[in-house]
Length: 154
Image (cartoon, rainbow, N blue to C red; front, side, top):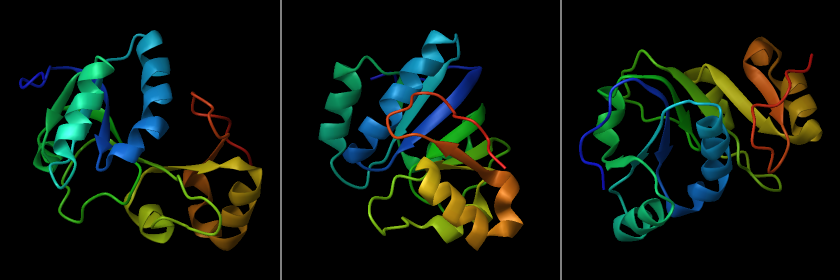
């Protein structure tokens, strides 16, 4: 584990639960290939040993503790759930909608709190643009398993 958080981090991924890794890893790897500095902040709420094991096995730069999100110097923080109410940051906040079926995974709150919201697939993107026209500028469509930001569609 890298206990010292490096300077000049471009993107931080907040991993609240182990099942967020499959959503974040392809994106993180693509950003690394583009030369960006990536760091993962792992939650200490549950499954800490498992998450550290995954992060170590994947060779990730990481640290433990949600409280680091408010102090870490970065350009962007990516969440797969709504950011904590207490979060104070100058970084841009991104929400990676990872719902399946009819689950919206905190989508309404994410629209209020995050700067950018990534939405899986065309159906959800069109639905959310229609349902939340006041947040249209925040919505970006991404494809499932696509390891890049995707294209903004109007």
